[in-house]
Amino acid sequence: MGTVGVEIAVRDDPRLLEALASLDRQERRPDRVLVAASPATPPKLLDEARQRFSALPITFRQYAGGVVDARAASLADLTETLTAFLDADERAPPGWLGRLVAPIEGGTADFAGGPTRPVRPPEGSIERYLVLLEASIYADLVPRRVTYLPLQNTAWRTSSLRQLGFDARIPFAEDHDLETRAARAGLVGAFVPEAWVFHDKSAEGSLPHWARKRYRYHVAMAMSLLKNGELGRRLSERRQPVAHPLRYLDAAMKPFAVVDAEFRWRRVSTPAERSAGRNPPSGTPNAR
Image (cartoon, one colour):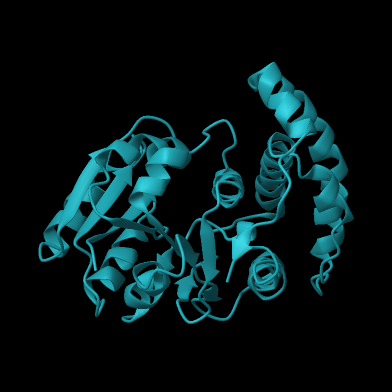
C-alpha cells in the first residue's frame, strides 16, 4: 500500500467545506489533500478551511484559469502514489476512499471510479433531470464502457496521470479524453459501485443557465470524440433514455454542438491530431 492523495479543484464554491469535512471522517485517511484553487476562490473560504480542518494534511495551491487548468497545472504537485479526485460539491461517506483505491492497490486496475447519489431528494424539474441523467450514466453507460466515468470520484496511479496529462482544450470533457487515452495505452479501469459519494446538484440554477452548461458539455464531448476518433461510434450507440421531458431539449442541442465542435477542434488541433482522429487505433477499453 502506497500513499494516497485526494485533490479537490475548486472555484468559488463554499461547499468545499463539506467536502473537506467528509474527508476528515474517512476510515482510510488520505496522506494529503490538495485543494487546487482558481483565482476566483475567495481567500476567506480558504482561510476558513485551514482553521476548521487543521487535523487534515491539506496543501492549498492556487492555479491560473478554471478547474480544468488547475487540474492540469497541479500534476507537478502530486507527490502520492495514488491520486483520487473529489469535487467540491461532493461528500464522501467514511468508507469511500478505501473502497475506491482497493482495485488499484490490489493490482487489478490502474484507475477506478464510483457512482454518485443525490445528497437529498431533488427539487425542481432541472435538478430532477440531472439526478436521473447522472444515475443513468452509472447504471447504463459506465458498466459497458469505462471511459464514461466522470472524473469526479475516481482514483489513479499518479504516474499514469502525469504521463497522460489533461487536455485543457477540452474543458467539461477532459475526463472522457483522459480515460479514452488511458484505455488505448493499455490501462485497466474498474467501476466500483460501492465507492459512491453524495453529489449536490442544488446549484444548477435556471433553465437558460442549465441549457448553456449542457451545450458547452455537448460541444466538449464532441471535441473529445473527434480527437479520439469515436464520434461515429457514439452517434450509433444506443442508450436507455431518461424519463424526463428535458431529455428532448437536451437531445435537440447535440446536432448543433457537433457542428460547433468540428469548427472548434479544427481551430485548436494540429493536422496530425485530426489525421489520428480519422484513423483511430483499434481496440476497446480494458475494464473489469
